[in-house]
Length: 85
Image 1 (cartoon, one colour):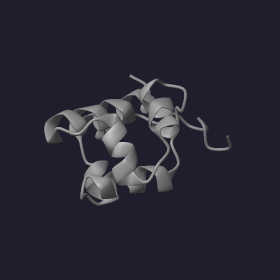
Image 2 (tube, rainbow, N blue to C red; image 1 turned 120 degrees about the horizontal axis):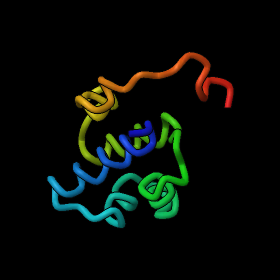
Image 3 (tube, rainbow, N blue to C red; image 1 turned 90 degrees about the horizontal axis):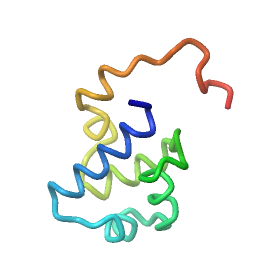
Image 4 (cartoon, rainbow, N blue to C red; image 1 turned 90 degrees about the vertical axis):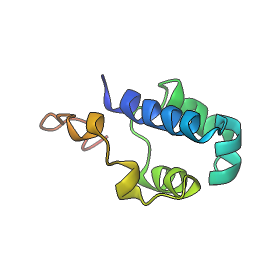
């Protein structure tokens, strides 16, 4: 699974666990619906840190808590991938 897919899965699983729609998450995080749609639908493969921070805050989590799950911990970043993009 790619990094963007892992983040999208995390967002969707937190939404489901907390009974929050993606639309409601957009309002809670003060993000555009299109921003979340782009992440969820794979058009944004590398969301900005500020975007992830706003999402985590909406879930009343720190960014560390948001990123603390097995799939992301097991993800292997390849040398030079996406660093300069």
